[in-house]
Amino acid sequence: MFQNLEVFRTSYAMARHSGARQAVTAANMANADTPGYRAQKIASFADSRAADASADLRTTRSRHVSTNVISTSARVQMSDAEASPNGNSVSLEQEMLNSVEIQREHNRALAIYKHSLDVLRVTIGRK
Image (cartoon, rainbow, N blue to C red; front, side):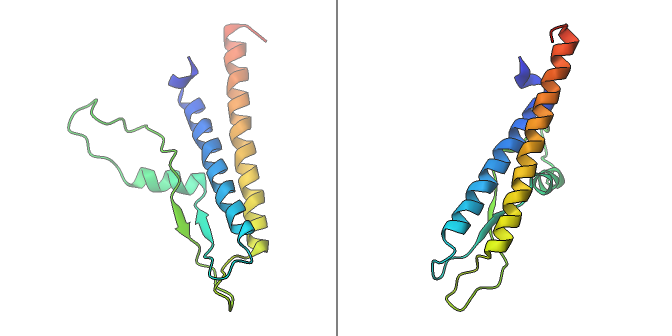
């Protein structure tokens, strides 16, 4: 029932995206002392959506490609942080800040999902 509602798909994609970002941040923190390790990052959900929207898809038929498909694939990029003498580019302070930002993004996705469920329940008369 709720798969056809765009708000649920968006909040689901946002939660999955924040989970992928948190996994990359955790891997960076785990490899903070590994010589030669290059920190990785994933852009925020908003930045990823803006990039997806700017790359408009061309369709040959009206039902060929759905333009409102939400991409849940996260693009991992190398961080542009300066490397230490041993070649490691992980900054624990930056990773901790990233982790807080990711937690806020995930909480926002859950709040949107919960509020949308509440609106549906009120609409159909169930509390």
